[in-house]
Amino acid sequence: MATDQYAFTNPAEMYSDFEPSAQYQEGAGLDANLRDKADLGEDTYRGTGRLEGRKALITGGDSGIGGAVAIAYAREGADVAISYLPEEEEDAQRIVSLIEAAGRTAVALPGDITDAAFSRELVATAVEKLGGLDILINNAGKQQFHEDILEISDDEFDATFKTNIYAMFWITKAALAHLKPGSTIINTSSIQGYSPAPHLVDYATTKAAINTFSKALAQQLAPKGIRVNVVAPGPIWTPLQTAGGQPTDQLPDAGSQTPLGRWGQPAELAPAYVFLASGESSYVVGETLNVNGGMPTP
Image 1 (cartoon, rainbow, N blue to C red):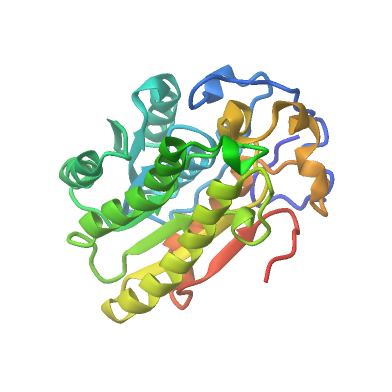
Image 2: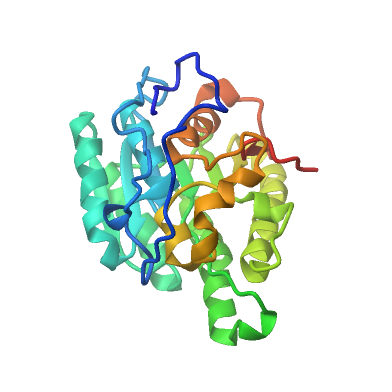
């Protein structure tokens, strides 16, 4: 049961017909291959011009949370560049078509952000094709569960940190040459940064680091008129979850741990990113906005 973001709805009863199965996908996972489709707000999100004329770069913008944010931003009046892995082209082209259907410019930028040179080139290309940049969303992430720390190889640990931390660092540094006063940076953390699961040791560690990085950078950039904030999702139904992000047999019940008793959907995250990018949040700096179904955080 999907509704638009302005509907008066009982949140505990939303998506009551959504009962995900125990699916596993190889690789990064695709929205296109989800048996139980995620709601990105493609049929429901209503824009009101809150980001008119803005220019955004969203990493991991092909699916899941990033895809939902790309759709919302376009419908709010922004031109949007999305980065994604080359194997996610099918998902990316769907998001591109939805951005363009909203009458906005869409820029598709495939590549691997764990490569420092590509991360810097990504920003330069986005700026060139969009004609500037004033919103940066560091959203792409790597999450693989391991029941035992001994199962995490050095290479996998490194890949998780390069995807979640190093890429954010490289991309943010490159973007700062182009961000003017009034611009915003929004990084994606997680409930795992506060309440880490034992099978997500490396992932949870990166998400706590994102919180700290963002709060420190927010203080540094605020005097320059650039705001930095964070969105920390709870259990959100995305392809990442079916691609080793969680134990496959636990997928049907993972959302039941929240007070709302269900998985969240990407469409429920998009308004938080819109708020933090818009002028409505002009006095919000260094904040972590938790969108997690009611799970307590410090």
